[in-house]
Length: 444
Image (cartoon, one colour):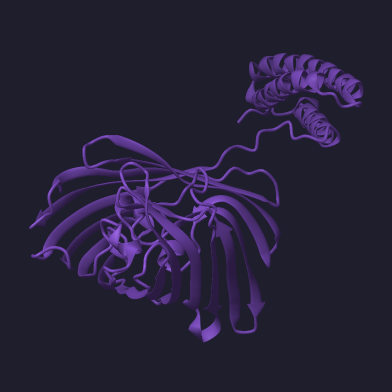
């Protein structure tokens, strides 16, 4: 590429940069504004002088190229001039950097990192419940934004667009959290985040492509999909890790708005708490290293008071929810195995039914074959006490068992095709539900 042609482009870019920076500096209330403007004017004049010199060099080069090749190759001054101009341009760029630093603000936009997920698929079922629709369907379009605000400031915003059962497009702000990194041992988040319990809820978020299967375990479905556990929290969350000789300890402590139940579904109260009873929870895990690299295990728990409301927004029941859980996962050597178990000890605070015990859990195993194919199997089981108002008020708060058999094909590192068969036996339904699901999911 011709150096004489490349340099004007750099000059043009610098002129535009100064043109943008000058109005911004003019509006600043900083005491150094006048000095910065004078330095910018000096830089612009220097650029204009360099531009004139470049034009002269281009004319000389044009004349030189019309001469015979043997003569054109000889002159050294014409070849050295662009290098001198480049050095002076580098000095101008250095000046721009100094101006940016001295103005106490970044005149250059660092950009907004944007990632996303999308999926489409096919669904067919045997013995479906009333209102269930089969056929081709759009899954979700999920935008994942991570603005760069500084070395210690962290921001995560996740906006999800989906299609409801009646065909309407719905938008949900799934996560909106702002954090500050004090050290590896402590990052503090404020906002709406995924409740830090278990393995699946922390490892696999709303993007279908990163999930090992078509869907989540039913007990861990998102609240608006009929999930029975509070997988979102709006509040404050402290997390960090401590390196040990054989691995790393990871911890989570959080508190936030308590969950409510409305229209048969959990509502994590992202806009404010309905009763002032906060959820508090913890998580403690260990990630192994060395010969056990890929293995992790942990425990977690939460406590809160949940109020169930009727269609007229009148309180029906109050339940003190106490949940304890444990998990183990292994992801290495082509294996992906994970399991979680939860125990509920819920107390009726609005009646005399006492305390009720329930349990739920799953085991999922997959293995990569030939680098792209991943057959997998998952077993799920929930034994939920129907005398417990917390589960009784939820549409999916019934005991069930589910077998899932699937095959995943990684067509590309960012694209996956999954075919899945599952059979669900629901305590409230006379016959088993058989489903076939096909999903094509991508990330970008």
